[in-house]
Image 1 (cartoon, rainbow, N blue to C red):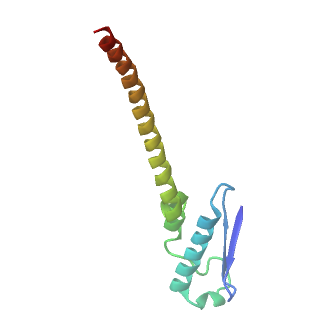
Image 2 (cartoon, rainbow, N blue to C red):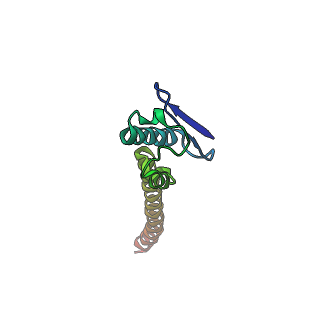
Image 3 (cartoon, rainbow, N blue to C red):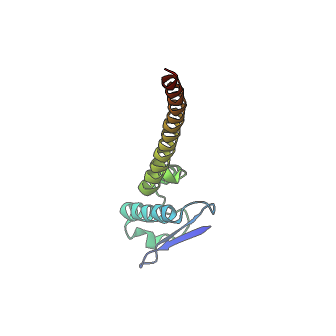
Length: 117
């Protein structure tokens, strides 16, 4: 999957990602890269004549951070936390129901004993 972000002045950035990579996170990364590049170089990029004429410090670290989309995207992180909470809740409910069934079974035994008295 290819993502492209181009500003009105012609400065642009492209990223190639797996098809599973979230679109919103990819575009967020591109906006961050462009913002960092503009902050570091301003308009000087217009005079650059070769591909490596204006490097961006910290780009490798930023790309490493974005390897895990859930780590950098707050919405994905929240979604993951909700999923984990849901799983814990399901396990808790199942345990309570199992314990309730066990108590119901024991309660029936007590009822039988009471009726015999």
